[in-house]
Amino acid sequence: MRIVLVGPPGAGKGTQAHVLAKTLSIPHISTGDLFRANISQGTPLGVEAKSYMDAGRLVPDEVTIGMAKDRMLQPDAANGFLLDGFPRNLGQAEALDAILAENGIALDGVLDLEVPEDEVVKRIAGRRLCRNDGAHVFHVVYNPPKTEGVCDECGGELYQRSDDTEEAVRVRLEEYHSKTEPIIGYYQQQGLLVTISALGKVDEVTERAVAALEKNK
Ligand code: AP5
Ligand code: ZN
Image (tube, rainbow, N blue to C red; front, side):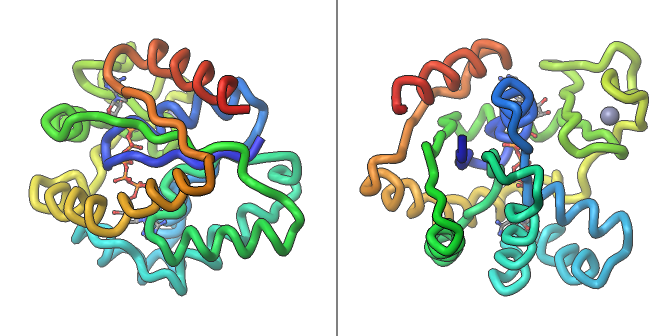
């Protein structure tokens, strides 16, 4: 299956993608995680992306599209993938369509996670990520690790993202409304859009997501 996850910052895209990717046996491709891995390795791409990310702004398409394309064309993604955080504007959605067409493949669905803004702010404020794997995501209240500051999945150290400040989150929400939301209409026109509420417990949202994707097949 080839699926795109859309939703505001803090909606739970990464959390759901981690579980769904395991359930569907496809790789979870997060452009945010790819950028953060480049930042921690100090690559030129990471250096370029960091200033945009810390400000809450989108990284330019020239950088993002090539990185996403390289990852999508890795052998482990040959039979499907779950995209989290890409595409994020109409230019990226069109670029993705071109990449899919070049490779004779197509999307099976676009899952839109709906969450009210006050909930998103609470989710982001308490988020903690694992240094070893950005897909290991916790929340100090909603999804606490068994031991404070330690990842349940791999024992890695948990940290707070440098773009999870009040100011950067405000900018990320603005970027979401002005640049990312238009892709929802784009995918609706293509008959690919499935919208679910992302409120409730993590496993309840997963059940809703699986049922919605099945129905859309
Ligand atoms: P990215 O890393 O993609 O961040 P984002 O879209 O802002 O989304 P988040 O990671 O904040 O949230 P999420 O929806 O994954 O929620 P999570 O599962 O963590 O992008 C970061 C930056 O990178 C961008 O600002 C941009 O600069 C750059 N970038 C990335 N992709 C780009 C692109 N394509 N183009 C240009 N620039 C790009 O959950 C949040 C919290 O809630 C967690 O603590 C979690 O434990 C908790 N939680 C999850 N589900 C539930 C639940 N059901 N109930 C209660 N709590 C929950
Ligand atoms: Zn971990």
